[in-house]
Length: 288
Image (cartoon, rainbow, N blue to C red; front, top):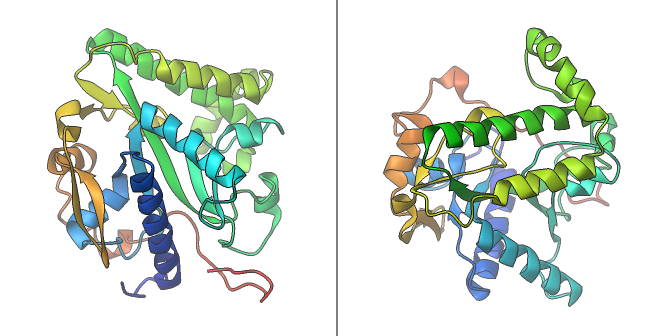
């Protein structure tokens, strides 16, 4: 690991989180693999992408439900790794707030930045380092059925944006205007109901025999990325910093589908941390 982009402390802490997660999953028979930029880093960099402060994993929906259950049981018995907490969209639903539909495995002993106005929107629940935990589900084989499934998820996301502060919606002014009717309609639907519908919609095709997966909790512009099940037929472990972590055997095809020529680094001007910076905090709080 290097500190060329000022993320050394973040990466050191995130590596410990990944090791704890990996040990927890192996001890409890839960299969997962690295995903998105973390998978890209494992293959191209043999560790973290130096300018990326995000961590992503993915598992089947069934494995994710086992993960939730096991973690809840371990936390109740005070046997879970210290500070490990799974935060889902329903955590903000009680307050009628929306961040996104991805679950986040946080380390509550860490902080991303000083407490402030932005953090208070989500009751500081997101002011920790986290690992995005995604679950992939079946996508229908038929083009029309698959497109309709994706459309429903995108519309649901637009409705949920009615519960997000407009200053936190990262899109153009024109798109904010065009999506305003959906956000207005969504603001009239309790977030708890939208979360429950998202859960049902994500699981609706589990009983089908399909050729591909997709990840319902991805951002809307990534919902069109689908993965052949053959890419996941075997899980292998590859070097990641000073340890080994699991990746799908079809990682080459998967990364190509996501990033194209993924072994080529972006231009220097594009090497920017996309999820915020970390600042020093008071001694009473472990900020990294």
